[in-house]
Image (cartoon, rainbow, N blue to C red; front, side, top):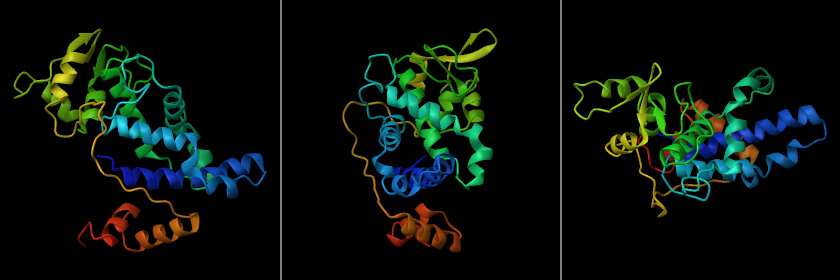
Length: 237
């Protein structure tokens, strides 16, 4: 499961390095300005809101509130982030890491929006073509499970069988059945209009400080999040 801290650290690093790439295109010295306030960007706030909805189930206007359409900023975030894979050769020139956690968070938000009765704007695979059903891959995404395990759950011998229907040659899960089955999964948090009580840690550090933290993490053979949690006494070494 994606943690908020890991998402924030990853997205901040991406936005700072992406500013260098944009600067290379414009050649106007934008990177220094952009890199200092990445957390003030529309993309940052939108991704965090999509994380809270997609992962934590907190409902917002345009994200699971029942009006049908996906929030325009959420649409932009999804299109931009999922389109980064096509820019990989360019991004590699500046060693810009593709923010996989952010991509997963926005995909979860878009998928949950369909689960909650909203109009489909995006699908993570070709099996997800209709807004009144979810694909096996989308069920796995929301349940924080691998696709193989979800497919096994569709077997007649499964203890809590996930019932599917054929649409053409593809197995899909009706929304009512998806809600029933997901409600019994440990990795799934039901949508709620009441803000959750999940605590999150938000850090704001300079680019230089982040570089030092990253270097220390690499020297200790761990990722940045694990290093910070270790220093805070949240993880035993």
